[in-house]
Length: 405
Image (tube, rainbow, N blue to C red; front, side, top):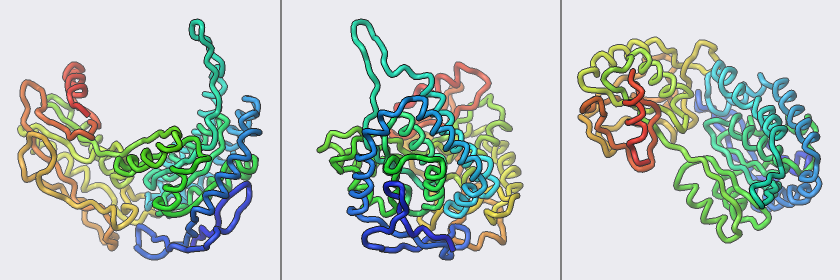
């Protein structure tokens, strides 16, 4: 049983003000895997105050000292790499091999990259008759999603520390394990008290208070469009800066001359990798009608060879989705595109390990009409194209530029 029973504020592990507890569930089994304390507005005030008080000294640190600190964090992160991989698997259900080869390797170098970028940056720049000076913004609220629980906090924290900002991190409430481990890493690397603070809790409580807090200078949010609208609205009265990275699903478009082997690998890796829980996932493939049978045959053979099951099994390609509420449901029709429906389905392989209701369901693929190698497809207004498969660069460029997204 994992514990997430403390917050990290002002360089110390501390209990929340009210001590409300939420049970955490193992995505693979549906069983309780741990308990997490839920912070409150009072805890946010404590964390923001600590960050505000630490800001003058930390923002004045020489660049060389900040670079050394970032490199020290990266070294400590590398030392705890296996711990982080296990934490990601425990909270997300990611296959342990994927946690080791994707999640952690994507996160750990963020501190080195931030150090390198800081070393190359000119903080004072002359532009004509104008001098531009880059200064730390101040206290940054970092709100991160559940689907990349190691990468997202690492990237945001590394960039903020490089800039000389102090931070309050609020991870997704479904999985705090990797964020707690990150706090341990930062503490061991010598991050000064108050520079990094961690608050656990519900987005509707912690996030809302952070977004509107008068002592927070910037909010960095990764999540859905509707929630981002609320973030911006809450931040507006205090005129704080808001940076949003919003999710969405992306089609892969296959043109008539495409290499189907490449298209199939793209569909599998970007569509089914991380159990499809990626903002730019190729959640469906739009296939020319006269190539659909060949594509489905190749895709079916590839998918039938994938192992779906226990995330702790090193041979597992796909584990569960993070929670029951995230389980995909196949549907007919939909979207604003010229297509033939109902869509045919390609089912995931059967497995005795799929005892949980949270395993991904069927993935839908559909035939589309083509005209002069141009796919007649109109993605919805909030949609981007994952990739266009063709042997001709001009065709790819025409398709990539055409949607108004």
